[in-house]
Image (cartoon, rainbow, N blue to C red; front, side, top):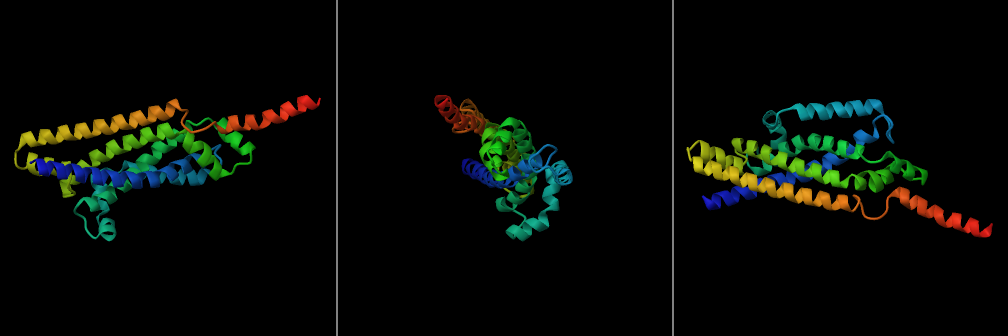
Length: 240
């Protein structure tokens, strides 16, 4: 069973890796947009915020197994099949996007609003605020949210294995449950526990490292603003 387990581990990591990439690419701008369009945000638009929020809530409330069945036609259009690890990536990614978007929203809301005001005082536009303040300052929390998303996707991939997507979930169902090989099922559970523990450790280590460095490289916008003012003040004093 060792070659079977090795292939199953690779299939699980393959599905989760690509799904996480799509979820981050789709969920990051969606979560930032929820913050920007909220009351008091840089792009305040209550109607747009409510619409986006409702779409995210509806997508999050759908159980993954139902989402996977509902997206079969779309999955077949994208990948040409509804079976296998490539087909499983589609519902995994779509299900993870709203989940990650809410985590991004929570992380970005923790950023000090004074930093945003400092960049606006320096003439920074919305893109500058997002690129220089919101994302860098919330980066440790975003990494923690990404780790949470990866762990959740590993659980979803096990459910995807029940419908022929492959991976460790497929091994546990086909060999552990249907063939009554209880030992193999527990080995699969142990492998999943080890994989999740390693991913959680790596994510926590990266988040703590960034948090110790202040969540960004270089001084904050507010500090840069003060530094640009200090020389002018010193020159004025010397002239006087």
